[in-house]
Image (tube, rainbow, N blue to C red; front, side, top):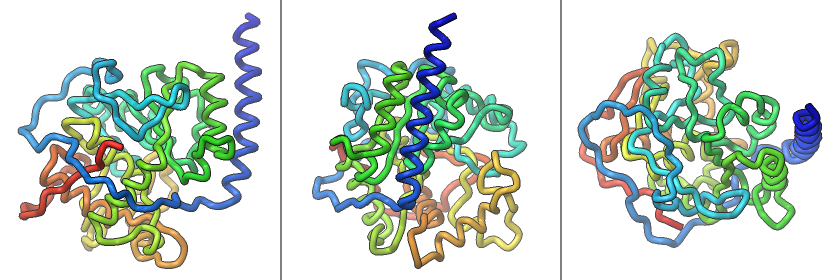
Length: 328
């Protein structure tokens, strides 16, 4: 039994080193990326909405024949991600998923997308167990390492995409998050770990400005992991079923349901309180959750996006055709 022992010791040393480094960059704050706008011309990358089709039992989404998604770079060989799904379940971390019993439905979808360190263990009846893709913020990496037995070792088929400010993700030896990811992937070489390139991050900023009329940096806004996840899903999925996302005006309703911001933190902050405080925030950097949801509702009028738990559809309205991120 020497091999498992060596592996355990090596993993312990790596986690210890990663955690110590993370303390350094976390102490610098959770600022957003320092991006400039992209001058590239945008091209649509997803299909228009079609009639609802029954979900299919999953086959592997990582296919050699899948078109490369430029801007998502492998930690190991620096090659772009090759992944395509005909149908995706985008599972949010919302408290609206509590007691939903949507887990079986979610797991029947070809690809299941999750965010940050949202767990499935103990919650599978409501959120499912399967994870095809997990989109992770740099600020969540410490929690990912802490819960590595579930989040990193649960499946060799899961793809991990990490995003963060360029100074954390740079590949010249000075990017602390990138360095930690390299070490982690050397210890666990079967992990499929990708980062978002600097150019792609600039395109995410430009997309936010084009869709909202607001410059992210001038308005002191951070793009949320939900923004990255939805936009990535539009690039790799023909159809997206979103679970746990409320409509943009939900928190303005006088008798809206009160649920925790995260389904796995029942004693945590109220979801609408979090949304409203961030939306109104002017000092310091804030997510614009409600603004982002208005954009998602707009996209759903053009692309094949459906919302469940709560179940809702965008109001019928004439909108300009939306364009997605170009290939970088």
